Length: 185
Image (cartoon, rainbow, N blue to C red; front, top):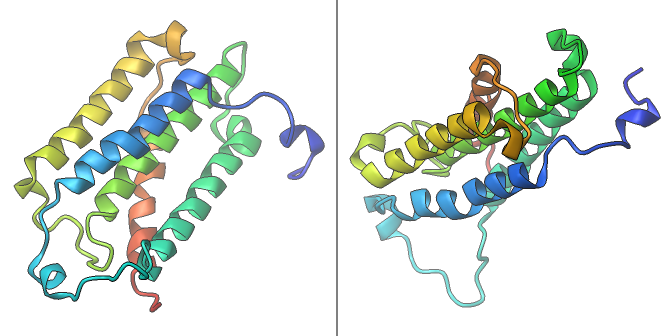
């Protein structure tokens, strides 16, 4: 049953250490990566936004809402159907599922950072290697994630797993972001 009451109550899939790591990625590392992105010629030709202008433009709201919905549905599906979908059985099945959820959420953020480099351009890889800080932050994020999952198991409440599924789930946010860019606002 998809909406069984036990799916809405119970233990949280992320621990406080994992939540801190996700917040650090979304806030600190994400800002560092995106703030080092040089302005484009088109951006520099735009008129400035006055003090009464919107801090977050409609295009950004569209991406925030679209990615939030996608990531919510991913995490919700994994929480509700993840064990059955991936045949997680045994004493470590909850830990394995929670590690997959954590890993998928981090990769969703990594790929969202790439998609957010330019909120209107569909080719988000254009010029990505020109910004060494951005590439270094993404690389450090992935390396730290592997360290957390593989070596800090007890501290972070994780279990080693293969990364293909979580990378794929994170990557799916990119075509969604690209599709969102075609919707006029």
